Length: 274
Image (cartoon, rainbow, N blue to C red):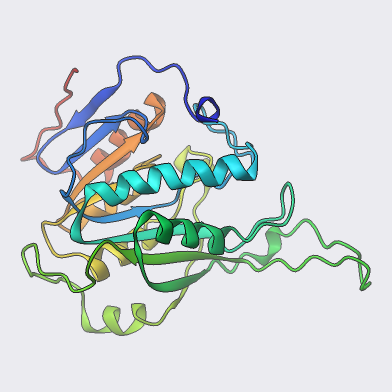
């Protein structure tokens, strides 16, 4: 099964690093570049296994293999998190490509099997009903398809929910706190063409998670960093970011986007070799 997710990679290791963020070009299942018990918050949107054309990832394996892979990478995140660390997992509610599957429920169950404790689920309403392409049996009870234009952000934690480590400095505004603790979030998705990545998520998603679930100066990790959106949200809100991606081109895309979005003339981005 692992071969479906691993490619022949060269020059893996630290891709870019400065005092604000680290980009790791490596496999989430095997990298040794993240220390155990060092991360405050994981925010990620893993591959959905719906045959998206990534450069270095096979996204159409069997559902059993997909769940097995999910359990392995979640176990790594569990080890990397501090005992009061949180985990925000952006996944589809369900999927119908290749057969109906209760993805959100299945991945939540797997996370709990790994050792995570469940806290809550945020429903992200993308408001994009126009993307529907399958209706099943049209105007007939024969075999209609029900497709909800929403995704989930499952909120979990490692050992204890109350956060006792870190700076204790929260930067969330009163109205933000009131709005975001309502578990129905409505904002648009992100354009693949604009970002240059086949499955980007909008920066509003990690921005809310970062401000709601972490303190200033905390370490925020995305094990599937892709175009770097989570890291941009972390850096822009005075957190430190760590991103892991198996594809070198996406690491470079993330580096460029981070630098363009969080440019600081006092901070140089340095490239480190293994």
